[in-house]
Every structure is written in structure tokens, then in C-alpha cells.
Length: 290
Ligand code: PMP
Image (cartoon, rainbow, N blue to C red; front, top):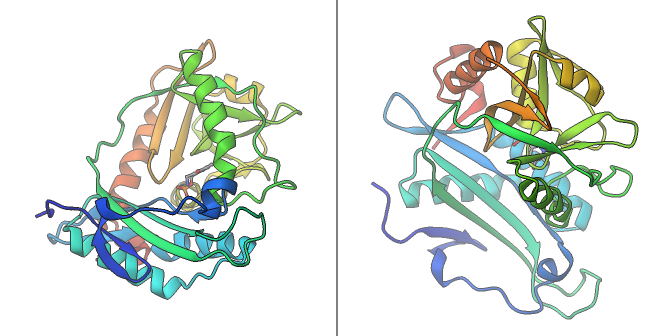
């Protein structure tokens, strides 16, 4: 059973999450010098739980930490994730590791700022095929990869916040980034696929995050990955977004283009749901038991 007080892993110890505080000179708060991950654990049929593709998530986090010169040890992070899930009694859970530069001065240099790491977990209500998202095309461009590497750097998400706020103000649920040439990039926290005449295509773009869910679906479906113009996405039979949190999310609408039924998306969503719970033996190596 879940404990009443959520515990978080902070700098090597499990402590009550409520009591944690960050100092006012926290470098990451001023300048975004942190790196995070979004990971899921799922209850398995044997009564336990497993984390989906944990090494891949932590390897991406390691690359982000390296960009800032933040110390990061994937083996320690693995232990921290598992310890936090166990301490909280979480089985179906969202896992948020974050490493960042903390207290120091107000200067931009990271040197002299204390590096920290935390892991927090929250219980998730699992509902595949939840809402069908309505996407607005963002007037903001995605951070170009020659300005910011497409990793989960905290500061990079200011770009996602701007786009998401704009989309919501226009009455949509989520934003779709396109580049100046009209190619689709990704959503604010999810990658994009389309289905045309039964063929599944993953949107490929240098400015998009190399999503682990996207990689999973590419392997499961044998889909092709290639650049996709927005015009082609609008002519597709089905469009879906995918990510660790979103899982496989059918798109109902992009601007005033409405999509009908989405049978291929549903089938992939169901397959994904079985894979993450360890019900597909061929893909059990993607699970780390809690
Ligand atoms: N793009 C962005 C910008 C994201 O933040 C995420 C969520 N991590 C994704 C795509 C999907 O990546 P993943 O499947 O690894 O969660």
C-alpha cells in the first residue's frame, strides 16, 4: 500500500518530500541548469512492478548532465529510482528524476554551485486511449538543435511552456511545432506519428527529442521514420502523439482538420500497453523489476 507521506530520494537519502526546500540562489531556478527525466513504472501480472526502459531514460539523462558538467552516475540513479518506488509502495507510477545546480551566487558560471539530485514518484491512474488530443499549430518554433541540444534540459522547456500556453489560449489541448520549412517537429512533450493507407510513419526531425516511446513504437511496428511536411500530416488517415506520459495518444484534430476513427493507433496503443506490463515475452528485456 502507498504510504501516507510521499518520500523522495534527495542527495542519497529517502526523506519526506514535503519538507524539501531549495535555496534562493539555486542556479537551475535562475538559469534552467538542470536535467530531468519522465519515466513510468507499471504493475505486472505477478503482483509486482517494473520500470519501462529505465537504462535508456538514464542514459539520456546522463547525456543532458554531461552538457552542463553535472555529475551523474546512472548506477546510483537506478538505485535511487527503485528505492523511491519501493519506499512509496508505488506500482503504476510516474517517476521524475532531476539533477541540477543548486546554491552558489547569482553568476552564470556553474562552478561553485552545489550539484543536487532528486527522484520523486507519483501514483498514476492508468488509462490508455484517454482523451483524443486537439492540436494547434504553434507560432513558436521548437528550440533549434544548433541552439539547444534536444535533451531534457530544464531551460529548454520554456519553449514548450510558451507553445502550450498559446495552444490552450486558442482552445486546443496541445501544440504542434513545425519548422520554417513547414516540416513537423514534435509536440511540447511528445513525438508524432501518422498512418496513411495502413502504413505507419514516424516523424523524424533534428530538433525533436529522440523519444523512447517513439523508438519503442518504431521497433514494435516496423514503421518508417522520415521528415514529414505538415501538409502531409493533414492528409493522413490517423495521427497520434506518443511519449512516456502520453503513451499512445490519438489526435482528434489539428487546427480545423478533424480525424475520424483511428483503428491502427488503437491497435498500437493496446500493444504498447501489453509490452510495458511485460505481457509480451519478446520485449521483457525492456523491463526492470522493482
Ligand atoms: N518530446 C519532448 C519534447 C518530450 O519532453 C518528451 C517526453 N520525454 C517526448 C518527446 C517523448 O519522449 P519519451 O517517449 O522518451 O518520453
